[in-house]
Image (cartoon, rainbow, N blue to C red):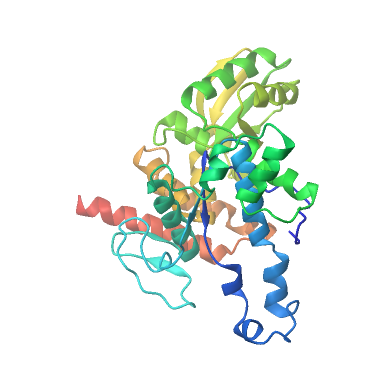
Length: 355
């Protein structure tokens, strides 16, 4: 993103309350620039910071949120990287320490920990603690005059490019609600009715977690078509608007080599019309999540194992089966993935021995 422009819509989904890091752009600029006016503002790190247009984005975000009746909460970031978002205990770190590890068991990237803590603080702010001024809250966008007042109240004095405002507007307006069990049931029914041929649809990720029961909701629905039913894409396009959900073609095969026998291990859900619905092989799902190893992924793998959706032997054998083919996935480090698999197995075996 360059200053006052934004070439493509941001790939993010916002909730009704937007929580933003209330940092000072001026404070981010190097000390040399702040002290010496003759130092070039458009050089080195300063250039990157200024061209990113964080301040302009925040102002436009406030204005667009105000127009849509949303609230934006700005949280002071001071100390958020030095405290645990879960238990709020202080966990001192040097700037070079990029990993957050707390006695309460939280293990994640320091930036993710800081973001979660900022969100936690923001959502705890009582009504009236938002970033828009009282005057902006009273105004409604009914005329050009009120719009100009709204811009002024939100601090948007200079006129940004139409592309910039449009893309921020799209980010806030195109918010999809969470997906629940009923929406997935409705999805299967309509896809079975609308499809013009037979085929199989495999759910994976959050959709499987929701249907099995270790999650109560998800953000989007990841599926794999194999074989692809005729007319299915037309039905998906229609349903995305009708149900206001995000459907993506994604499965473990997009991140790892396909495991031998994955179809046979995929759990049958049901059949609607000519379409059979399955959970994609949970052994493959577990390996795929371990390859990413985000906090949510690790919790999902643990939940799958506790639900007995795969065994430790299947997990180890599955990795060994695809290990020779991992060279086809340059972004993956086979040794790192092997270590994650073995560590997960050892931890589970240790818990079994304790019990």
